[in-house]
Length: 220
Picture (cartoon, one colour):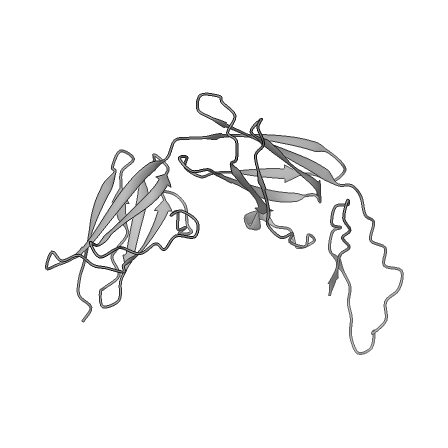
């Protein structure tokens, strides 16, 4: 099993591996030392160098480089203040992923590494103006496909991420249309799935496009 300690005002300790078996059902001498940990300040600006107020900043474990000796923390979220900044306190040493979102801007992410010991780190993130991308889904008979689910993937990213506004359904309306809000001005790949149709192959969308038409074929 893995043991860790946490208490308000302190950083969560590293995970301590303990072996338990029928022959060894009692362990003593395990010491978990709490410390105040490190702090991470995130400063958010736009391309004009102006502070972005009210941006949502999420801090998560960076799973791509997560170490087994560190027990995952839950996602932490904060809004930037009037100076465009927010601070996360009492963080254990680990690799973190920072995501920043704000209406009118495309989402940005950064990685941060906090080493052993108490430290203060600052990460500056520049938000870029997002674009709206309208996706129109039709079948081979030139009819609108309602209820098609849209997903979008940045070029060079392995995992597909839905980048529509949080909490909104990512399905096409009765006109076969759906608008992806605040997308980055870079090449994207669109994927579409709809009941009764063959899943469409990823379709590339160039950085300067504001609309795309996807044609689905009838299933069997």
